[in-house]
Amino acid sequence: MAAQESKRARVTRMHDEYDRLCAFIPVTKCQLDYTTPFELIVATVLSAQTTDKRVNSVTPALFAQYPDADALAQANIADVESIIRVLGFYRMKSKHIIELAQALVARFGGEVPHTMDELTSLPGVGRKTANVVLGNAFGVPGFPVDTHVIRVTGRLGWRDTAGKPSPEAIERDITACFPREEWTDLSHRLIIFGRSVCTARAPQCAWCPLNDSCPSAGDFLGAAPATNRAHTSAKRARASAKRTATCTR
Image (cartoon, rainbow, N blue to C red; front, side, top):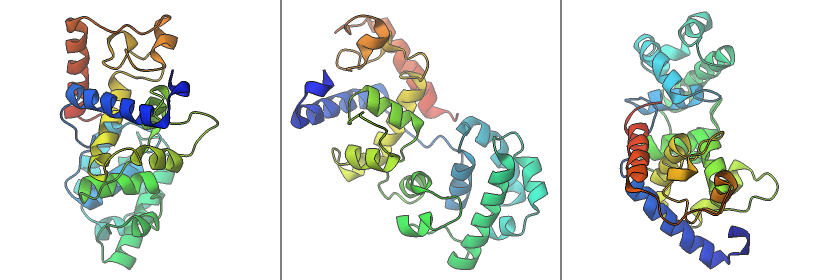
């Protein structure tokens, strides 16, 4: 379906589907627990290759011990490793966050910068992490592209799925279709939707609110997507998404 669409038709469909996602997931928030930009950037670096829920389980102890960049910059790496040991790649991540803190102290007076170029110049900080920090800590529109965003935008046919586009290319293509002020919440909703409905292994197409227009629904349902679903199924889907939106992973 999506392959035969004109660009204008696809953008129109994208906006219609996003309007429905906004109704389906009315409230969004960052899934990482934080109180300062420093805590957010560290937590985001730690979230690579693991879940936010697991990161949130270790950051209270980490930030109690190291509440700012000055403290973390002087940390003993073995002590940091012992706190975040349950995370994947904890040794590498311990090294990265200490080096990050040292760079913040040496170059930015211990404060987290608020431009893309400055953020991505920091150790362990890529474009995705920078977008998370910009959008959530500083209110600067950002569109973090994670595995959920990659999967959902591909299944929905919101972008070209030929080859293996980079996260940067996906960010560029999707943000070109939406106003800047919507980028941060757009990413949040796609991530929440990817966790609660459009999951990697068993997408819940039968009660997905977009199953009547999603070009991939038929692949998972084994038939053409239905145009109407029972009210109870929609209610169940909204409840699941709401739980994901309002609690940490």
